[in-house]
Image (cartoon, rainbow, N blue to C red; front, side, top):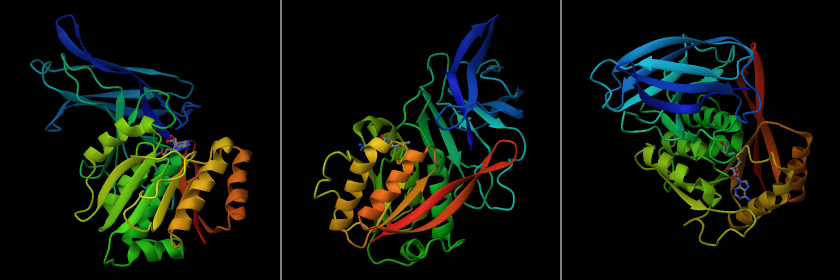
Length: 349
Ligand SMILES: C[S@@+](CC[C@H](N)C(=O)[O-])C[C@H]1O[C@@H](n2cnc3c(N)ncnc32)[C@H](O)[C@@H]1O
């Protein structure tokens, strides 16, 4: 289970005894927010100038097992109170990804605030940065996704999404063959753009990553209308490959998908961490069934972290709808050197 640094109180600039101080309150929890990291981790908090990334101040912090929150307070150097700065909180030193694997996701995922100054309060967001290349260090040219600091289910990044990104990265780069139908789809040069639809896209991390990784694709992100603002922000910050595009349309599984959903036949449907709610599974599988009836050659990549037994209903419904699957997995780090397997399935008819 990966752990995420979160802002319980987003950073703000305050005047204290003639100095300008940036203060915030963080915690480190799972994607669901249902458990705090129960292991000691050394952290670094850093203030950088928003536009140049020049480091202004750095401070060491310690998260200890049993903690539920950790205050941060960093003094701004004189003259910088009016300049927009960004607070980064990250684990100190080399990250410990899963042993003996190329997993680029660390146990503790770092966070970046939106720019703040004495006049500019932070937005209730936290940005995540992931390297899509060979470099272990996240760079701004890589995948940057904002998620909300509150408790929304949709406007967060979930572990299975991280596994999907890793898997798509391995398969598009040819590092791994992946499941054969997916490898064939993602690795062969194309005359027309690969048509991709993501269902329940949340913040859009998986579809946006694919648009950055694949040289020639058109990715439609879909979800309930509540994600529109965050997904628009993430699309705006995305850097799709030069011939690729990514856009958003609302799509509720409880409504039949519109006939004009995509301009041409769908090649790939993405789905990550969408099977946690057994009540919504019949509508989800019915949407998949309808989409694949319109695009019979489509394959569906499903990533899921098993959270409870009722999720097996998904597999029964997919089998009843005549979908056949192949299975693979991606290990993610978990606390105390444990590993968490994220399951991946490739469905087709
Ligand atoms: C746990 S989140 C996963 C988000 C994202 N795929 C990820 O892995 O980070 C499940 C997503 O399914 C979406 N969802 C749930 N019911 C839905 C429905 N009836 N129609 C469309 N999307 C739905 C939610 O809004 C949410 O974004």
